[in-house]
Length: 64
Image (cartoon, rainbow, N blue to C red):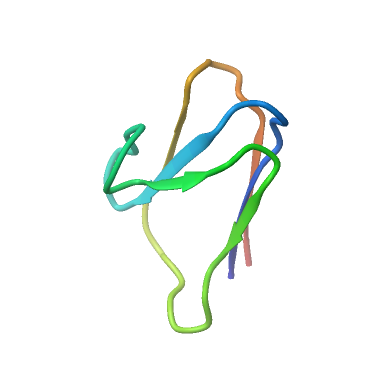
């Protein structure tokens, strides 16, 4: 199980698996205030990378 939550109410967050996230494709856009949970058929087990426009951007990432 993997949960990523963008805690910002104004700034987007991008994330990617297995490679460094960039602020465009092929990374996944997570809009301000939204969260992402892995679908039943996929749970990454390696590197999870995130990027945002500012340093100190608040987010949560939980693995179980």
